[in-house]
Image (tube, rainbow, N blue to C red; front, top):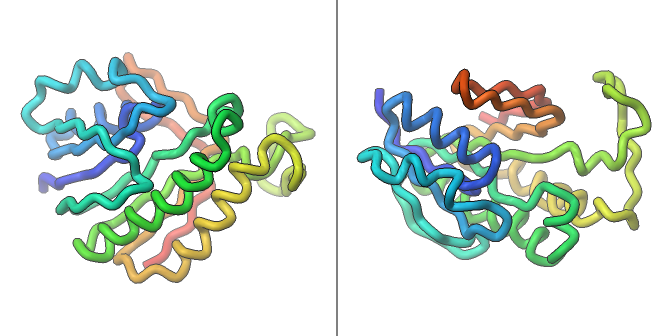
Length: 191
């Protein structure tokens, strides 16, 4: 069944590959991005596809769309990006999640909420085993991402959206030639 799918941060590294994969699968894809840390060139090859739509918009501001699924990938993830404008990073994490949850609730859509391993701090061991608890420093350079994710999760746990999936990406490998996305993740599902 063809679904109408919103990908926020859709022109970013992970988001653009998700858009590409969903378009190839025949779904109607709306890519929402403000290009704060992403590039339009990441999705330029999709612009001529009839089942792809690009909207320049900031997730911190409400938007009214009708969708079946939401992949909320919007948030600066690289240290240089989230440290450049920490207030914008927190707003993107928190307000972006709240706005996407509003759409999910209104439409009865499923939502995937991306997160990052940055919230666990600079790891002391590589690779990290499943039992690793992180090396969190509340005043360190990763504090912005930690706070944004920390504020966002309680709102996700108490939402009335149909289904919320939270993915925390630890290792991402996206071979575009193969057209597949492989992520080692920790996931939580709220039904």
